[in-house]
Each structure stands twice: as C-alpha cells, then as structure tokens.
Length: 224
Image 1 (cartoon, helix red, strand yellow):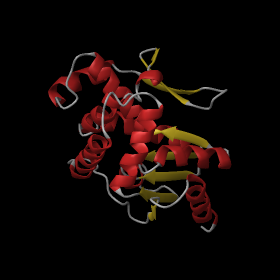
Image 2 (tube, rainbow, N blue to C red):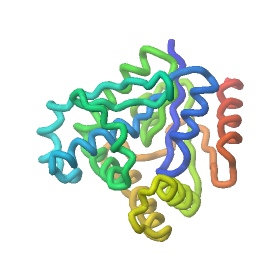
Image 3 (tube, rainbow, N blue to C red):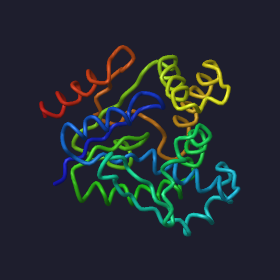
Image 4 (tube, rainbow, N blue to C red):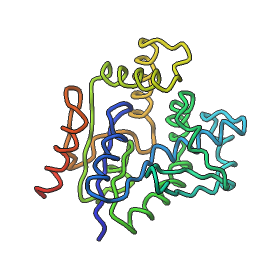
C-alpha cells in the first residue's frame, strides 16, 4: 500500500514549498496538484474562454490530454497539455485566480482527481492542494492542514512575485485583497471546498521557518 501524505491549506500557506522539501527528504514523489489546475486555467485562457464560464469551459475538457513528467535534473514537475509543456507559463499572476476560478467547475475537478488518484495508487507520494485529504484522498495515511495569517501569506506572495518580476505594479494591499478573495472563493465553492479534513493535523506556519514545518510533519509521520 503506497504511503500518501495529503497537505491542504489556503493560498500562501507554504504548501508547495514544504511538500517539495518533505518529498525530497523522504525520497518519494511530490505531486503538485495545484499546478495541474493552473495548467487547465492556462489552456482555457489561451482559448479565449472565461474560467468562470462553465458552459464555455466544459466543451474544452475532452480535448485536453494532460500528462505529468519530471525533470530529472531539477526534479520540477512538468505539466504537458496536448504535447506542449506549459510549465513555464502557469506561475504568472493572472493564472493564480483563474486556477481557483476554474477549479470550481465540478467537471474540471473530476477530470484531474481521476489522474491524481491513479498516480497516488501506484507510488508513495506527497500531494498538496485544497481538497486532498477531504476529497481526493480521504483515506490518505497522513493528513496535514497548513495555515497562516492572511497578512503573512500576502507578504510571502508579494515577495515571491517581486523576486520573479511579476508584480506588474501591484501593491502589497492589492495582493492581500487577492489572497482574501481567493480564500473566500476556495472555502465557499459548492464542490469540494477548502476545509480541514477529518483527522488532519493543523499547523500554523505564520511564525515558523520552512525547515521547522518540515521537521514537524516528519514527527507526525514518524509517530504514527
């Protein structure tokens, strides 16, 4: 039975960074589910469709063939859609909210959840997202919910975008407003909303370093 570690939490809680570090230390696969939704969002936007338009998005889904590969040198997960590696484009700021928006469409989630479950059933892995422990893998052996104050998460996001040169004139206040808006959207969507999964251990990362959080999760895994 593969070891599955489900890490959930709101935007900017540090899920992806910590999931990657944990997977590296445990020498198991890291599956970035958020990147998969970003890939769908990118594809939809490139087709000129509003991610909030379910009637416009659903007809596109049968034509999307997504595969997951891994760069042997960097270890970075690559999202390939219909033969095109879209990984370089999915971290743009415009994709963040679009991914949250398109993920509200049940058909989008069902398409990606099927692929995520298949991968998790075949090998040990760490998965992070909004509904991993509550919906994607409710029977995961380990469930973690990472959280942090909105102001802290916005500061992290602001710094990340600044370092990548992707702020496009946005102020910290605008990033904070975006974080709060995305939190509300993720927590209030009708299908598989962001919640603390049953049995999950909640960790507030506001005052913790990434290494401290990884060590805490390792303690949880080891003490089971």
